Length: 134
Image 1 (cartoon, rainbow, N blue to C red):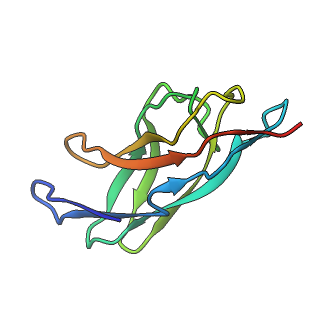
Image 2 (image 1 turned 90 degrees about the vertical axis):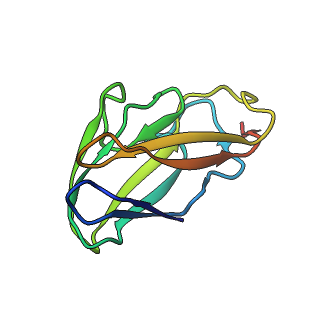
């Protein structure tokens, strides 16, 4: 899905998330959480606009998501400059949930900020009922 935002004094910010929604499918839980979280998926964020901008990951609840390379989820994390046509890749996993935590699909959110006024690009994340694997 493509998102647009008209920024004051600059070209519109245009981002494409892939995949969107980020679908973790049925998540197999084991007794120990693997490095990077359960059911880790790659998320690409592409600047499809004509201008460059700084991209940041908003603070998020680490009880839901593990994002590789982001040690402190309680603060906004600068991901750097995203030039036109450039793509930023994130490895996203589900963190420390007990088996059976979810009994139906969940729609969760990771949000991203760009230059200027805080602008949230919400990404829907689908989580299917969990499986227990011994």
